[in-house]
Image (tube, rainbow, N blue to C red):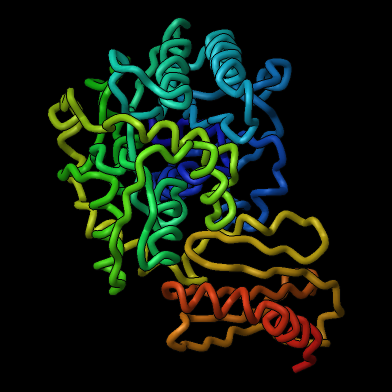
Length: 401
């Protein structure tokens, strides 16, 4: 089994970026499916896997992707497509299940959303449930895990909590921030996904997974603030429309508006484990508490750990918010003798900054600026002095020493 070929969809996404290194460490051969393989170029494991250009929304591209595959992970969502994404998710899942069946795949492992299907659900959560149902309509056994808030640096839900709590001393939010959540550490999500490969007891089951504690969404934000050393309070305002909340989240966090709109709508109901069978079926998974998961995420907000999703071979200056940082990046073709690599760091009351120069195998130079803001002063420092940061970044790119 250890030499089996594993297909991972959604390879450019967060969960896959944490799962693939663990699969490689366990000795599996990994094939990643991506619409744009160059988006994986900056990943540390890029040269250790096979990459196939394919799209689950285009069934004709899947035949080659499934050749020789033992188990396939379905880690795809289509929220970024905006309106109409729910129909696309169902169609994509049906095409994927059919292609897997034709190719003789033995097992599909799917990560969906944690919600009670008997309650009124927002479209995002209902779509996650329906996707699992459609995957199970095929003949290939499906193991489905349902998770809510995932605590880990880079997780969409965690980054929403992080950026909003860092930015606002008085955090505004709707009254449904009092709804309950059972967050799970990213390490445990990957533990479950890996355990399903070798634990026959979970084959074909549906498992709700969560951490050892239940909190309200308000409590999650306040616990993050305490662990970060920030004094924060909540201002709950009933009647805030979803579109307005999503607009603010899209503006101030790494989460784009279409995804924010879908996710925020999904927070309007509790997301807790009501059927804890996963604890009995997968006893090898030792649950990590929310506080420990946050501490780990904070420790990994550093260039040594941040997933370099911006390295895709495309020219031009790039600016993004990612894993708690503001990031500037540019690659600049130069001869190998015109500059050296290295990293400089600077810490202040506003946060921590790293400026890094790297050379690839053929001598091209890249420069990356990371700024990890601390609270509202850090955000103001970044935005008010942004022209200065750009100038500093440009000067470093042109250094010859």
